[in-house]
Length: 331
Ligand code: NAD
Image (cartoon, rainbow, N blue to C red; front, side, top):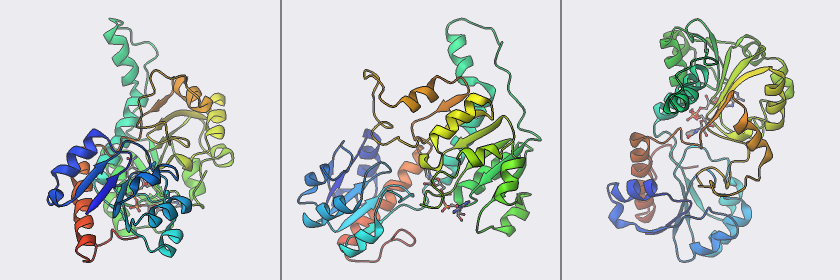
C-alpha cells in the first residue's frame, strides 16, 4: 500500500512507523504541505495521508485522482480543508481520526488559560534573568468565574468538566445540547447571546464550517463582558483577527490564548525564526502582553499520536484489503 504522507514531521514518522501493521505500508514521508502544486509528487501512490494545514480542494483532489490516488487519510479530526463533494465525484475515499484524545486538547486549553491568566510564561523568562520581581503578574482565580463553552462535543465536554473541578460556574451553548451530560456535571446551557454577555472566559470547541466562520467578530465581541478572556484551540477562522485586535486595543478583550490562527497555513509547524515576518496581524498579536499563542500543538501528546497512528494505519490496511473502515472514520 504505497502511501505518501504530506506535511510530515519526525513525530509523525515515529508514531506511524511504530503502529501495529505499519510494516505492510510502503511509506513515503514528505515535509511539503499538500497543495495543487505539490500534489504531483503523489504520483504512483494509492493513498495520501494529510494533516490540518494540507489543502485538499477540488484542483488538488483532481490532480491526486488523475495520478491514481484512491484514498485520502486525514490524521486529524477536522476536515474543513477537504472538498467532500469533489472527493465523492472523483471516487476518492476520505477517512479521518474522529477522536484520538479529546483530553489532550482540553488539557492544553486549560493550560493555555492558566499560563496566560497567571502569567507563567512571563514569570519563567523573568526568573531566568534573575529578575525576581512579581510586579505586573497579577492574575485572577478561576474559582467562581463564569466560563462559557461554545460547542459541547468531545473536547468541549472535557474542558467544561475540568473547569467545574476548579469550582467555576460553567455555561455552554451548542445547537445539539446534551442535557444528561450537563446535569451530571452541573453545566448550564444558555443561548449564545447570554453566553457572550455572562462569561468571564470564552472557550471555543466547535467545528469550522461556512456558518461558524468568524463567529467571533466585532458584533459578537461587543456583546461580551468588558475584559473577557478568549481561548481558541479549535480552528483559527472561527475568529475574525482584525476585529479581535481592535477589541484587544480597546480593552474589550482582556486576554487571548490561541492554539490556532486564521492564517496559520504555511506558518504554524515551521521554523521561521530566521525569516522576516510577513503577517502583520500575527506580528501584532505576538507583541501584545496579554496574548499567548502556541502553534497548533493542543493535540500533541503521546496518547493522541499513538491513537492517530493506530487508526490511520488500520484504515490504510482495511482499504487495501477492501474491508470496511473503522466505525465513524469514513466521511
Ligand atoms: P465534536 O464534533 O465532538 O464537537 C463539536 C461540537 O460543536 C458538537 O457538539 C456540535 O454540535 C457543536 N457545534 C456545531 N456547530 C456549532 C455552533 N454553531 N455553535 C456551537 N456549537 C456548535 O468535535 P471535537 O472533537 O470536540 O473538536 C472540537 C474542535 O476542536 C474542532 O474544531 C476541531 O477541529 C478542533 N481540534 C483542534 C485540535 C488542536 O490540536 N488544536 C485537535 C483536535 C480537534
